[in-house]
Structures are given as structure tokens and as C-alpha cells.
Image 1 (cartoon, rainbow, N blue to C red):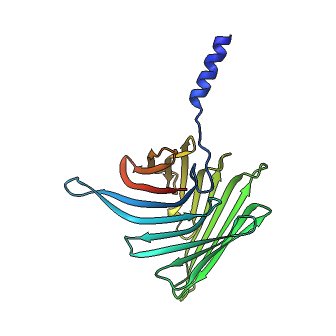
Image 2 (image 1 turned 135 degrees about the vertical axis):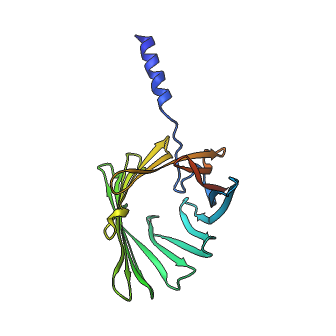
Image 3 (image 1 turned 180 degrees about the vertical axis):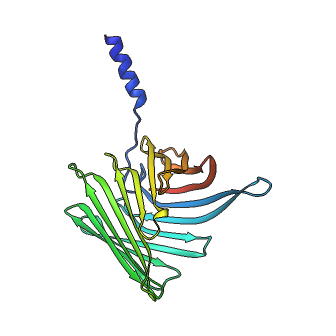
Length: 255
């Protein structure tokens, strides 16, 4: 009997993983800045691999490991986006101020809480072309862990007052607050509806499956990683339908 118990316990240990504990910055260690590069991978007519850097994103963090600024350069469109994060007295984000290089107006996202739990985010903006509204909602289980979130987005043409885009995305989470599935509903163009499933291994995203409005599988994306000595990934390859499409790399400046 003792041997059987030892065998069963060994099998249990093999099936378990030592998931690293992450800080607010998503890393296992404190850092002052993370620079990410998003690289598109394609093959030319001779089947030679071509890598083209599309986006460079710089994130800076405070002493509480919380993000305070994000600077994104979209090289493919020659534009930039800057986000400033403002916190309340409880060290919770209360506002994002988004600045786009091709838009003179700022885009503001406000956060609303009940006690320490985030219940809603809301933002509105308007320029000469369109009016934009975005509302996020959050639900929790009895242990105050996130179980569901929603994000509604509406674009309205200022000149004609016609709705350009009206979407609602609902995401569900497991007991570790990792998103496991999401459903995107496009109310103007239902044929664009999407269902997405997420698969993890020891807290690391390993696979995403996307289904169309008819619930047919349209893509499977698998991820391969390289990690540094602190168990933080520094390179991630996105392989969609058995084809390498994107590479993301990270340069982490630890404290």
C-alpha cells in the first residue's frame, strides 16, 4: 500500500508545475523598464525569411511595480501612441491619458471601484471624424477573483451620425484570473463574430484557437518561448496554422 501511495504521489508531482509568482509588472523581478519589439515574419518568392519590425513599445514602472507610462511607435504607420497612468490613494489606476501623434485631442479612460475591486472603466472622445465610446465591466466570484469582463466599443461618424462599429467582447477567467475564453459580437456585421479559446501551461499562454460566427475553427496559434535566468520570457514566437507569423522580443531593465 505504501508503494502505491508513493507511486500515486509521484505521478501527481509530475503533473504539477512550479508556476512562478508574478509582480504587478507581470515579471518575477522588479524592473524599471520593458522594451518590446513586435516583428512580422514573411517569406519572399525564393522562400527566404524576411523579418520586419512593426512596433516598438517602451513601458516604465514605479516603485510598486506598476506601469506609469507606455510609449508605442508604430513603424508601419509612422505614428506614436503615449499613455500616462495615474493612480489613486489606494495605489489603483484611476485614469489613463492617451495621446496619439495623429490626433490633437487626448483620449481619457476613467476607472471606477467598489472598495478595492474594479467595477467599470469608461471613456469617450470626439474629433472631426468620429465619436468614440468605450465601457468596460468586471465581475468577481465569492473570493473576489475576476471571473468575467466585458468591453463595449462604439464608433459613430460625426458627419452622418451613423454607427461605424458597435462591438461587445465578453471574456471569462479561471481561478487564477487567466482568460480562458472570449466572445466578440459585432452587432453591425455579425459575420465578424468570433469565439476564442486560450490554453496555458504553468501560467504561460501556449495556444489560442479562434472560431468564426458559425463556430468553425479558423485559426490555431501556438507559442514558443525563450526565458532568462529569472524565468521571464524574452522571446515569443507566434505560430499560426503551423506558420511562423510574428516574433515578440523583450529587453528588461531590472532594478
